[in-house]
Structures are given as structure tokens and as C-alpha cells.
Length: 156
View 1 (cartoon, one colour):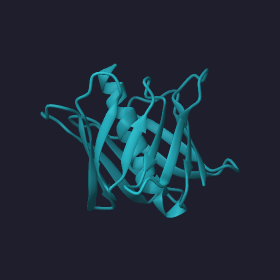
View 2 (cartoon, one colour):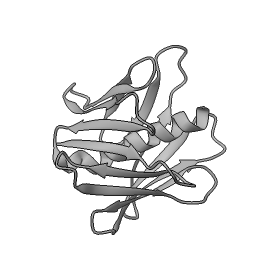
View 3 (spheres, rainbow, N blue to C red):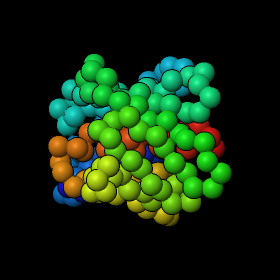
View 4 (spheres, helix red, strand yellow):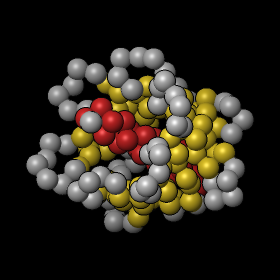
């Protein structure tokens, strides 16, 4: 399953539209006013299905992931000098990224690829292509991408 993740050009808060290969809106993400990033994920019908909430006052950036109201895990930036790394407490997944954090892969503990994420350059707003191996993992992968993007925005 391939998703196209595009940040909206004019928005006070983080807002994104996520499309499938045919150009249909699959998810909409709306940023909410809060301490730290708070991103609400809506399905194509406009129903709230997930949240990415930044925990503030932590040593390194940490984001909690929720499907509906149920906590499903968290992602935290790991302390490293050169290669960006994130510790994930969600399905046992791991993230390995490039030096610039534009391209990265989500894998299972056995090494199987869950998703690959690549940033498209030369766009007005952040645009990513997300290739998800299993469509059932699309929401959780999207939450990881949102958390990593929010961490990069906070740092810059």
C-alpha cells in the first residue's frame, strides 16, 4: 500500500492530508493547540481514529501513540551523535534512517520490512511517500511518520 503524505501549505497548526495512489484522501491530520505537538488523525469519513501526543518536559523528545483512546505505544528520540535513531515501543518495530532523516525504514525484530518512507524534494511543503507492506499497519506507520516529522520540526 502506498500513501502520499502532504503537509498543507496554509495552516496555523500542523495539518496534513494523506492520499492513496489514486489520489483519494485516506487520512486527514489536524494539529491541536496544546503544550507540545498534538496531532489528531481522522479517517476519510472524518471520524477520529488516532492521536500522536508529544510528552513535554522529557530529556529527549517522546511521543505517545493512541488508536482511538487506547494507548498503543510510544516513540522516543535516542541519544546518538551521527545516525539518527528512535526507540519504539510499538509492535517491537525499529526505525533506521539516513543521516538527513529524509529516508528511513521501519522493520520488525526479525528484519522484515514494515514500511519505507522517503521524502520528496523540491515541494513547497513536507511531502513523503510511505510504502506499507501490510495495509493493516498503515495507521501505526502514519503515527510514527508524524512523530518523527514533529520531532524534526521542533528541533529546527
